[in-house]
Each structure stands twice: as C-alpha cells, then as structure tokens.
Image (cartoon, rainbow, N blue to C red):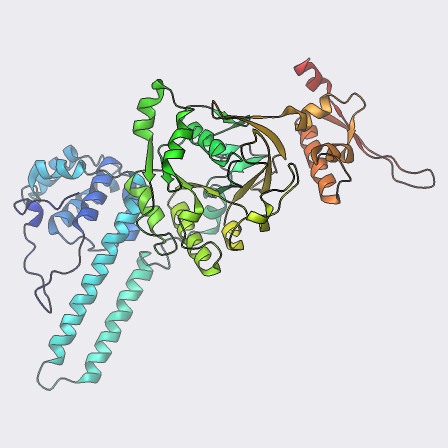
Length: 507
C-alpha cells in the first residue's frame, strides 16, 4: 500500500522524531496498515499478532489508538469491523484524531490475506525495536556529552537497559526465542500430525501437509505432466490424480522459472474455456528467474506466498531457485527457505532432476535417493520424494516412492497421455487387482516378484509386498492363511486370498 497522503490523520500527533541527524526513525507504514486491516477482517488474527507485536510497536499514534480499540473489542468478543470501531472511537473521543470514518475504511481495504499478518507484525516489531535502540543511543550520546560524564556509570546504565529490553521480549513471548515455541501437547495434537493428506490417503500419503513434495526425473519423463495434474486438482478442476484424492487449495503460485513457454503449452492441454474464472482468481504464475536465489534470500519464498496470497507454491524447477545444487551449505540455506514458508502455512511442491549418469537406467529398476542431483541435504529436508524412471518422451514410465510420509505407493507403472495431459495407472501392478486375479492366492514373495518386474526379489522387496498384503487384510479386501514353520518336512509360506467381499464388489 502506498503511504497515505500527508493530509491523512494518521500523521496527526507524530511530532518531531529524535535523531542523531535529520533522518527519520525506522518504521513501515505499509506493514502497520496491513496488520490493522487484517485484524478488522478477522478478529482471531489479533491473538496471532499480539504476542509478536508486544507493547508500543506502532509508529503512528493513530495506528496505536486503533490497535487499542481492536484489542478492547476482541477482549469482549465483539466484532472488529470498521463500522463497530467507528462507534467505539467516537464514544472515546478519538475518532477524528485517528482520521475519522474514511480512514478506518481505508485501512480495512488494505487486505493482503490472513496468512501474511504475522510476517507483517514481525516487520512492525523489528522497526519498533530499532527505534528503541536508536532512542537509547541518543540518550547515551547526550549523557556522554554532559560535563563531568562518568563513562562507567553510562556503560552500566546502557547494559541495564539492554538487559531489561531483552527480559521484556522474553517474558512477553515476542522475542525470536519464543515466537515459534509451543507446549508439548499442542505440538503433538495441533500441528497437523493427524491432518488429512494433500494427496493420497492416510495409509499411503504422497504429499503430507507441512512437508514438501519433490518430483524427480530425467527430462521428458513427465514430471511437469504429473505436477500440472496435481495443481489442477488443488484448484478444484479434478478430484484425483493417479486414482488418489487431492485436497483443494485456496491459491497456487507457480514459479515457472524453467522454460515458461513450454510450461504454458503443457498446461494448455488441460485447460478449457470453463476454467477461465478459476485460473484467473486462484492461479498465479511467475515467469522467469526470481529476484534472488533462495539460498541468498531465505525469506523470499514466504514473502512471495504472502504477496500473492498463495497457500501452495510449485517450484519449477529447483535448479533455477538455488545458486548451485551441489554445495552443502547452499542446500541447507535453501532448506531454510523451504521451512520458513512451510512454517507460515504454505505447501510446497518441487520439480527436480536426477543425476545424468542414471538417466538411461532400465525402466522399472528401482532408483535411490543418491541418484537425485545435488547435495543430499536437498532430499533430506523433503517430506516426500517421487522418482519417475523411463525414456524421454516414452508415454509408459514407472513411478517410485523413495521417501514416504506414511505407507509407500507403488512402484506404479503409469501411462502419460501427451495429447490430453493426463496420467493413468497400469492396473497390472495394483496389489488388490493382482490378488483378485489369483484364485490360488499369493505369498509375499509372489507379489514381490511381480512388483519388481521379475527376477529374485530382495528381502526389502518381500517385506514391502507383505505390507501391501497386510493393508488389504486390514481393509477387509483380503484374508490371510498363516504359514507353517520349516522343519524336516519343509515349511509353508503365509498365503493371502481375495476376500468374498472383494470378489463380490468387482464381480
């Protein structure tokens, strides 16, 4: 928001600023207006920004008066809209001093979205702390210039003032050591541990809230095709991707840094005239390079989300967001940017490349996390990693789930429709379908052989297949016949059969 004109009442009563020179003390009017406007729209935001702001944070006296009125209304569980505030301030005799009814409505029009209010409050608090430090410095200079000044006494007073300021910050919870701290019960029960996944199910989660999703693969294997389907599902234009549900989003910011024209052509396959309203209102696309790389400005990702009121960000692709992917320190800096955005309630999906040496790996061969290009800290900080293997341009590829929030999906043989921009699952690798089509049942080893595409499965492959079958038993789609331990006559493996319910449902 532009700074209000000099004749607006928000400047009333400011008075001259104490200064060592002619410069004004630090403040940010835009942030003050944004916080007040957000609180007028939603009184619950007051509880979020109050511990961040602390006492006396607003630079303009009019804004401080309006803030006090907002606090009074909220304490009594009353509305905080500008109409109600007008009445309250008029009763207190403060209405004209703060600018009258027009200025309150002007503030209410400044609405950047509730998700960014805490960030704006942080800006206000930092400016207020700088003003306090500046005022303290001015007093110190004045004391030092007095005749007969005692340097030890001045130093002692400065240290006492700094300690008092630090203790106030810690006690009020406004300091950096407290802002993101919470009690153990709230952490376990209220931080999304029991939240529905953004993509997938509770048993097999592809994308968990508060954790980033990374889609990795060589050029041409369909990373963008898959990502766009998830984006359109987040926008409400479809309900599932790869037969798994996708939760809706409020607004998506797509960082099209890598060949934006190609990204536009890929999206166009899936866009219809009836989608115009949703795409104009709920999808924002950033074309080309960012103002700075995320390792240089870790707050940039969160700031972009706040500026565009987005609760989902798609990074296409990671190599364009970080100065270099192979430097561990820069990878850690990028993860800091990722976590700052996630901490602010922004969900993140990242498109990334694999190492060139593995680009021609046989289709179906299981990759590993160390085949993702760059520092290991890139994947270490991701919540979920999908890896697509196959030949460039080949419609049939394999999707591997290398890092899982809950149960693993796949490996899935999938087929891209490059004309329509859709992806479908090959049912021949679905454990439920395989079990249904096996009248004699399956052992975990039988299933593992099919899932890995033949050959001798490793112990991990068999255990993974066993978990697939156990989930089918838990869901009532399969029954289990326990095996017999080995001995002189040999053993018998546990065998699983499709349940009558499962056969009836599909018969």
